[in-house]
Every structure is written in structure tokens, then in C-alpha cells.
Amino acid sequence: MPRVGLDPAAVVAAGAALADEVGLANLTMGLLAERVGVRTPSLYKHVGGQEDLNRRIAALALSEAADAVGGAVQGYAGRDALAAAARAFRAFVLEHPGRYAATIGMEPSGPDDPLAIAGQRLLDAFMAVLRGYEVRESDVDHALRMLRSLCHGFATLQVANAFQWSADIDESFEWLIAFADRGLRAM
Amino acid sequence: MPRVGLDPAAVVAAGAALADEVGLANLTMGLLAERVGVRTPSLYKHVGGQEDLNRRIAALALSEAADAVGGAVQGYAGRDALAAAARAFRAFVLEHPGRYAATIGMEPSGPDDPLAIAGQRLLDAFMAVLRGYEVRESDVDHALRMLRSLCHGFATLQVANAFQWSADIDESFEWLIAFADRGLRAM
DNA sequence: AGCTTTTAGCTAACGTAGTTAGCCAACCTG
DNA sequence: CAGGTTGGCTAACTACGTTAGCTAAAAGCT
Image 1 (cartoon, protein in one colour):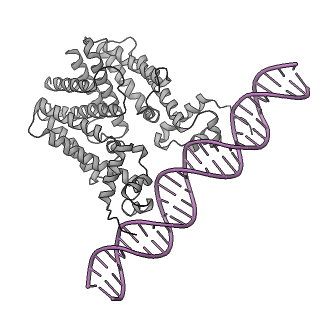
Image 2 (cartoon, protein in one colour):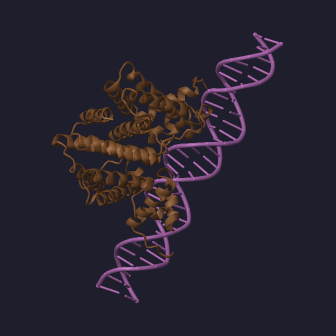
Image 3 (tube, helix red, strand yellow):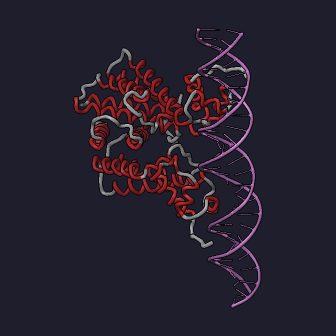
């Protein structure tokens, strides 16, 4: 039996890619094993099981999202930063629906859980956007939650194909960015 | 073998209640069968299977949500209507996380699918809120999607326990309602 | 190099969940 | 009361996650 040369990171990366392709709900250990060229039980040498796999995919997704949003914001401020962050976030979710879905409902086990660290990095990226607006200290948390709800809600609804009727979806998203920008500037 | 007197509606209602209790992911046919006092295969006399059960739970959830939001809005306009609708929606999701989760990613099969009808009723309730604001015809769809993203995003993030840090969550939601109200009035 | 240790792959087997087939008793209808 | 319909049942099959235990490839040591 020739060795394939797997390691946990490779298994998680393949799992994330597969989740994006077939949907998180259809990501099975058997399918993943086939994808990486190994029999199902061999996966357990690298990840603890499906639960552990999902956690690691979620941590990867949050880390990548943080990189994407953080990178997009670099060098911008105010409305430009808001637009860049929102677009980068939505683009990430649309391109990687499976791995993003893995993050939903996943609770960090502690403050040094990779999941918590990556999630914090993503939040920090959005926090940087708010620094371009004159938001009172006591409003920052609320504004952050608002931005997060907007972006998360829109992206997940679009991925779920929940926007059925007429108007153009990209146009709606730009409208939404403008709406949030006006609201934040008017504080 | 005494007959239990089940029918599809009773099975779906029990399934929805059970989903709220144990989470949609943990709703199994066996658990539901036990709950309604029957062996697993007997459920298939009333629903087509798990997929069908989830669709029916989703339709029930959307219908109930439409009732809740529609009822809450009655007699109010403008900011009061917006607040009533948003609060009713979030309260519904928090009280019925399992059945609401069933609606996510569920696509109606056609225009007379109960799912589509219930979903449309829920949208109509939010549409009624917008009539209390002076929104241009061409902006209505965008504004509706914004409201939906906000409410859906906030509620699902809260249910997933994704708001970890300090600030009070109810306060954030009221802040968010005020934010949306100001934005809509300023159009 | 040769010997030992570790380890990444394997097969076999088990438990659980969804589903189907087919039986039978309880209800409804005449 | 006879006959059909139907809602319950048991038995059995499939698919998936998981564990146990084996073996050979790689890595390390003398």
C-alpha cells in the first residue's frame, strides 16, 4: 500500500473544497476519503471525526475570510473601506458556500481555540471599517453587529437562493452598502 | 395494535416542536416516532420521508412567522410598524429556532408550493412596513432585501450564539431598528 | 547497512439512521 | 355483517460514521 502523504491540513483543505462543491450537508467521510485517494477509516489518522473536521473547516474558512476582508480594506477608509469589506465578504461566501456554512453555529471552546482567533480577526477587519466613521464608543458594538448581520444575512440568503424575484441582486447589495454608509455617516 | 390517530399535520407539528427542542440537526425519524408514540416506519404513512418532513416544517414555520409579523404590524405605521415587525420576527426565530432553521436553503418547487405561498405572506408583511416610509418604487425591492437581511442575519447569528462579547443583545437589536428607521426616513 | 520504532494506510466489523416491503388488525362503508 | 381501505407493525436493506486490529512503509538509531 503506497502512502499518499496526507496530513491534517491537506485533509481539511480537501474537505473544505469538497464542501464548497457538493454542499456541507453532502460532505461525507466516504466522499472525502475517495477525493484524497484513501479508504474512509484512514481519515481518522488525521482528523478526529466529522465533528472535528467541521470545526477545522470552519476555522480555515474564518481565517480565509479574515484575510480576504482585511486585505480588501487595506488603504481605504470611510465608504470605500465599507464597500470593499462588504464586497470581499460576500464574494468569499459566494465562492466558498460550503466552508462558510461550516462556521454557522460553531462555538469556540475557549479563547485560544483557532476558531475564536480567526473569528476575532474577521471581526477586527470590520472594526477597522468603523474607525473610518465617527461612531461613538458606546455605539461601536451595536454598529459592528449591524454590519455583521447585514453582510451575513445577505450573503447567506443569496447562497440559499432566497432572493427569487425581479431586482438584480448585485444592485441590491450596492444599494445596501450605500444605505449602511449613509446611516453610519449620519451619526 | 391500537391506532394513535395521527395525520400529516400532527406529525409535522410534532416534528417542528421537536426540532425546536433538540435542534433541527438532531431531529431524527426515530426520535419523532418515539415522540408521537409510534414505530419509525409508521411515519412514512403520513410524510414522504425526512426531506418531505423538513419541507413541511419549513412551510409551517414560514406561515407562522408570517402570522406573527403580520399580526404585530396591524395598526402601526412608520417606525412603530418597523419595530413591531422586527421584534416579532426575531422573537419567532428565538422561540422556534428548529423550525426556522428548516426554512433556510429550502427552495419552493413552484408558485403554488405552500412554501412559496407562506414565504410570500411573510414578505408581504415586511412590504407593509415599507409602505409607512417614502420609498421610491425602484428602491422597494432593495429595501425589502435589506430589512430581510438585517432581521434574518441578526436572528440567526443570535440563535447560533455568535454574539459573544460584551454589549447587551436586546439593546443592539433596538439600536439596529433605530438605525434602519433613520435610514428609511432619510430617503 | 541493518535493526527498531513509529505511523499511515488497510480490512473487518459494529451501531445508528433512513427507507422499503409486506403483513395484519382496526376502522369505515355498503 | 362483509369488504375494502388504511394505519400500525416487524423484518430487512442501505449508507454512513466509527473503532479495532493488522501490516507495510517511512523514519530514526547504532
